[in-house]
Length: 403
Image (cartoon, rainbow, N blue to C red):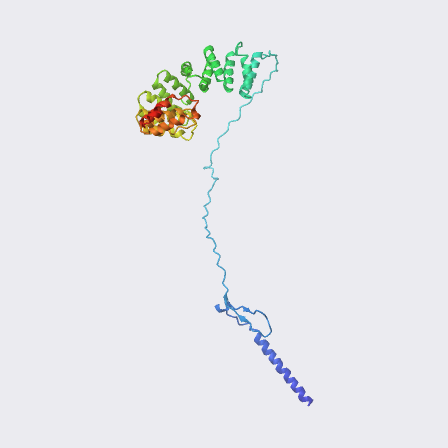
């Protein structure tokens, strides 16, 4: 019995060993074989189970395809051709440049030395007047203290060898302090008294530069000196304008118009020059040209209501229209005149005459009635009563006209 049991155990062990050998043989792949992949192998199923429990089968969701990344495109490489080697230096003695020969330097003589001899020179001292003149120039030109400079120059302009130069600087100091009458008197005295051509030329240049301080009549004395020293005045608008006013006073209208035509349109005096030029054309009987000039310049100053020249341009244009019988145009231009101008009251009276001539009698009488209020009671306006009476007569209001 024991022998049979022993044989059974031995056979059982052998069967179990063979089964294990077959199992391990099936699990281990052969070395000589290689597994092949197909596109289906890229399909991966990911199991998903909300809660894990033993014996629960996994639930497979949708299959996702794993894609490879995009290929990287390398930039195109341009291969440049290598330039052939150029020989810079030639080793051939026939082609090498010939170096010119340099002459030897000349022999330098030995310097001749002399003994230094010092001698005393008399020192020229500065005179008191010269010292005062230097002080005045420093205050005038460098420190710009014109009042101090003026006090120094006034001591030298009477009895000194520097009196002409001191008088010139005295006049310029006075102009810097806006003492125009003092400048005019001093500079005219220098022009009449000095014989030094250099100082006289300097004085004429000063007058041309500071022509605002001079009177229109002074052009008679200054103009010959300007021509004598050949001083350019073509770009000096102030001088040209003052010269034109002097020429107009002397009835030289052509020369005056020539001076006004040289004034630049960018100059602050351009509106003044156009007003004066229009007046010249009117005096010459060229009324349409005068109107054209006024209509051209008024828009350039229209924005500045307080400008005196602007209001004078408007009043002049309105009066010319009135004289030509264009009463409606005249009335429209009168309305543009600023009420703060001293010319406004006179323009209202003239405007009322234009209203009467166009048949606006009520408006003319009403404007005159406004000027007869308490606000204007201190202004002497006798013509306003005539305009008001004419307006009432045309309205057949004879009692008001008589009153």
